[in-house]
Amino acid sequence: MSSFSELIKSFGKTRDYVRDFLIYGFKVRGDFTRRSSRTYDDEKRRVESWLGDYLRYDSSVRGKQTSISVDSGHSAENPLYQAYYARSFTDRDIQLHFLLLDLLADGEARTLREITDGLNAQYGAALDEQTVRGKLLEYVREGIMLRGQRGRLVTFRLMQETVPALLARYPGLEEAVQFFSEQEEFGIVGNMLLRGAGRRNCLFFRKHNYIVHTLEDEVLLPVLDAMERKCSLRIRTFSSRSAEGREAIVIPMQILSAAQTGRRWLLAYCPETDRFSGFRLDYLESAKPEAPYAEYDALRERYLKEKAQCFGVSFPIPGKVCPEPLVVVFRIDPETEGFVIDRIRREMRCGKLEKAGAQRYRLTLAVFDPNEAMQWIKTFTGRIESVTGGTEAVRQRWYEDIRRMQEVYGDDIVS
Image (tube, rainbow, N blue to C red; front, side, top):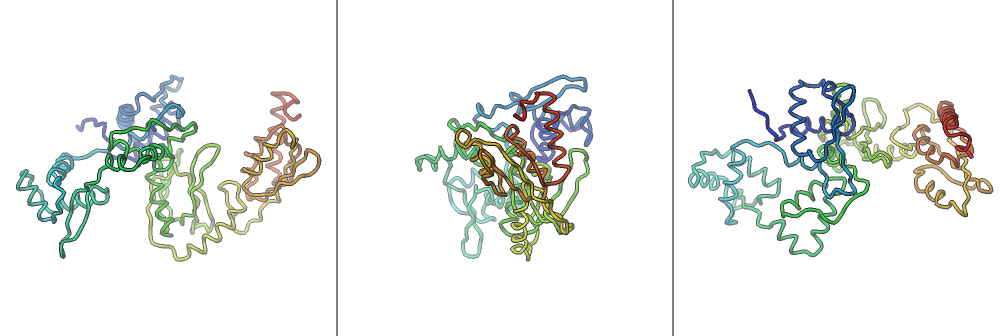
């Protein structure tokens, strides 16, 4: 029987557990249906080993619930970075790592044959060239080794430049890396640089820091790579309601982040349905760039044209007529509430705001899905005088919401 290990063998499996149980789901042990209960226990113990100080336990009629509790305004480091430092390795991996560093510590460039012979002669390692080549190429990609040429032979030597030396050489660089280490995208890179130099971020704190974004970076990187190279992208998505995933080929266009929730979306063209769709990054299991897409530039122009009709991530359906423009009249005193006017202009994304009389302002939005815009418009409740256009369902939902709020708060809600 295999013993439990705190090291992570599959980052995707641990990512699923952290997302579903500790961040979004607030689930209990009985809700874990994708794999065996033993897997749940192992994942729980593994995460507790590097997130113990940030976990909160609550009891309910359904069972014991575990969640993450983090005050980002008082945390100098994203605790979820710990997942990247808990990767598993074999005995041979760790042995070869230290032997290579010791053999190449003199900074001399050696060929593959010279390195293999040196490992076997000096340390009795009994390694073959294929194993050593694989590790050397991995370290070239990681920036640990430098690859060169000696005539027709490929050589490898250890990178002599170290992170502590770089930070000491350039004034202000350490502060810049500290700031980068808590950025939402790929902040783990800055965190690793600091740890490699024995430093920690002690300067920058973010009040609104979506720490879960670091769990999405593994799929965000290939998505950005496909966009830069104008390639198609093979993605695999999964649902919180089902263990069955779905695979599709899409053409990536843009990454959007929701200001209210912090959730990030991949906007992409789906050849199967001939329309643009949004995919939540936290529901992407994997992403792999495919071949270059010949019509990418033309598709990009179509995307930008249709994006002008979107308030969020809902795109027009081919052949379907967009609803009539949504018109909202606000009652705002420009003398004392000019900040409200500024906010509307800053956040409306698409549309037109114009003065409609004394203390009256009319916002016109021609968008494909008025319901997305209404979620934002409702934040101005108390200043909304009328809502017209859009769809009947959107208007009725708005009036029903106002009626229910009046029942709770009285007539002051619309005064």
